[in-house]
Amino acid sequence: MSWVAEETPEERTRRWQAREAERADEKRPVEAVCSSCGKKMKEGEFIAIQGKILCAECYADELEATMDMGAADGSGAG
Ligand SMILES: [Zn+2]
Image 1 (tube, rainbow, N blue to C red):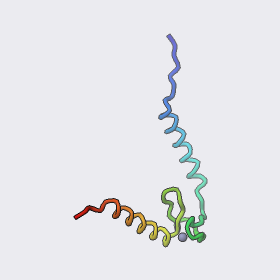
Image 2: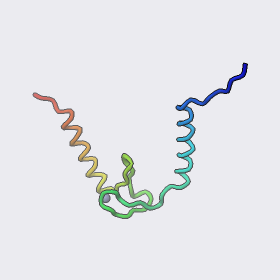
Image 3: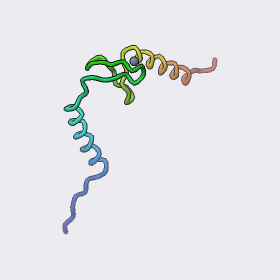
Image 4: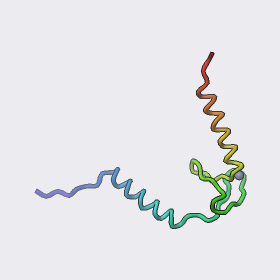
């Protein structure tokens, strides 16, 4: 009785993500461009959120917009 232990899709995905994370760490961008206003920033000046790169100002705008959406969604009729 011989069988090969197969990797489950979950295991494979986790292993792949771990490897990608290592590579991403090696090739960390030193500079980035704000995806909202196009401003150039150095490392540490930008915020990565939901797959976007934002400068501090646009990040603040994004936060406000998100909070507005949350408030509208969770409003209760009184
Ligand atoms: Zn910006």
